Image (cartoon, rainbow, N blue to C red):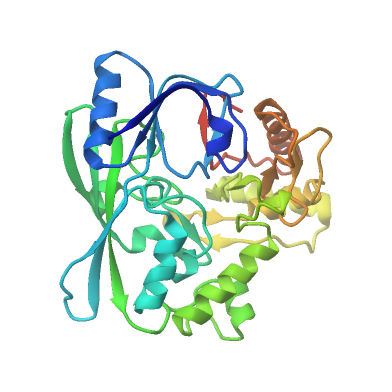
Length: 355
């Protein structure tokens, strides 16, 4: 039975510990409860916010003037194997990292480098969660969702999800409510080829080599902890929404402008991170840009600050409000734009606020 409440403070449900009250709050633990709550709110003409772990949300200090549906569904089922491929269907409310840990324990490869990411399964296809050389789009084969436009449950295959870098058909559009996700994993004690240079160095292997699943997971967790990216109540640097800005992807003209500005600011021999992308584009590092624009770890003129461990995370050490966090984000974005001509884009979902 779904649990209903009113004027529930959302700060207690987000990893930033920010956000005002929800006018109406529904704790839904079954698919039927999720669909029923959303349908009722739609029928009543109320705004709807659906979320799970709250690890990727920046919520207004004023809260949310409608119905919040908190996804608490649980359950996993495994389909019959086809060769070394196994499909696992997971309810949206399952916590992500315990799912990854179980895959590693069961000898299922494909998500091991996504260890330590907070949040729940239902969020992973929405922003095409990725880290250390893996994206969930590599393993997601189907997403079941409630289609609010058609008022029916539908299944979208990988192509229909329209995955791109930190984006999908689900992001920026509240049409679909993710109910469960099916991943296709490889039955193996070895990881997928290690694609991320920092992780390869930590493991002492070359790019493209494999290690055991446990070695990959342990190394990723170690790296994430060093950057304050594994939730820890005793560490205020983990009171964040993870990476606050996405890594910019530049067209040739934008890349040329960045090259010019880097040379002008840092000297003709200065280099910056660059990674080839499709269609002649190039990805660069938001963290590098933030740091070189003069924003050091720990920077902050108010209650919000940049993490003392990683320049890409904006944190609430304990006394900040959402407005404080946004002021810091605007300061960083404007500084990078002024220094390098690159417009940073927020990665977390904004609710009732904008940069």
